[in-house]
Length: 357
Image 1: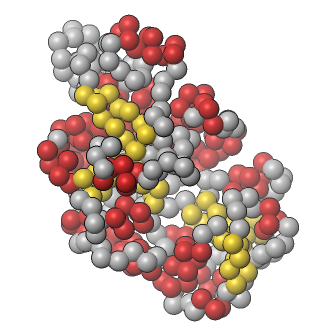
Image 2: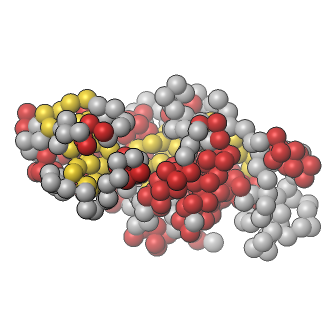
């Protein structure tokens, strides 16, 4: 399924440029072309002829992509001369990795590092940036049964959406798997509230919000959620990847995509609710998303975006030392083998080029 703008927006865009997917409310960034109209930051406005650029999502068009939606809405991609088309993911959609591998997409957004890095053994992939500096995965627990370290899992019954993350947490902490009981469960944390288990594998951007909105419980008082990264399993999330050969052949457009995306995520960090509103009202309008839930989720996502390296180099940047010393062991504990050297798996020179200007 391809993400389409509303008829109203398409009409407005066609009247202005004839080739676009998003209204250019405020043009910013490097433009070009023959237009004499200046963008808000003093650069030239976007040219009329836009270059198609397809991006495959790992999941549905919700607030997780809020910074990309803001970049679309504010015309940042157009200002760079790009006509960005989003290919939504989800349970019934092809994976982002398969679409990039088949050249159906120019770039992909992976949910966590596992999938893109696992595919590197067979595909010409390289990661060029990451939206979230920490994986939103967490262990959800009630206040009378705290799980704040990996050792606290010993003897517990774990309600697991996926067993893999639990086994990886145990492995990286040298805890035998027979020291816990793992019960498969779904996306709803109700079994934890009902006492069916001691701890529940969750996402800090999702189930804790459900605990508050649907069960009337308060984070920090009635329950807590310990990030998997704090339990020895750090991972980047929403990483941007592409074929190394494609980047080499078309480097300029990948730099443009990253630059515009960086601006969108800066706006998201300043106002997560704006990204949530775009997810609910436009980009995920057919998904029945709830604005309050999406806004709360956006705020949680914003809390995962910054690190020491992003403070120095800008959003989307990655810490290669942390990747090699902390995240590679976590990937291996998760069953990802044949990992290439970090220098081959990640290419930060595009973001370096943006940072240098």
